[in-house]
Image (tube, rainbow, N blue to C red; front, side, top):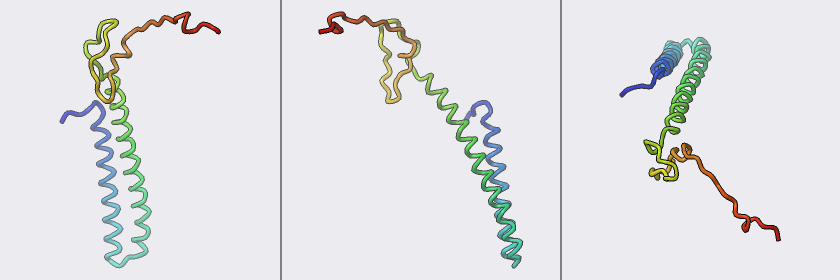
Length: 116
């Protein structure tokens, strides 16, 4: 599946942080299994730091994709944009941003706004 420009860097960072987390957990468990309880407890701080980095990398990746989604959402519209006075044809739940390409004029009716 094709990726967006810059997306691979986010996936690489996330995968690296997950690998570092796995390594930290494996190290702490290995020390515990070997009977080195104190060393295992010290390894928990490395696990916590690695977990924080996984969360940060995931948040960066999610924000990247949210930005891409925002940019793509603004392109959802009837194409080509309808002529002046013609309504857009898309009736999707997300709407049709072709409405934003239209110029509208309004006339106020004096009768509607007359003071009593």
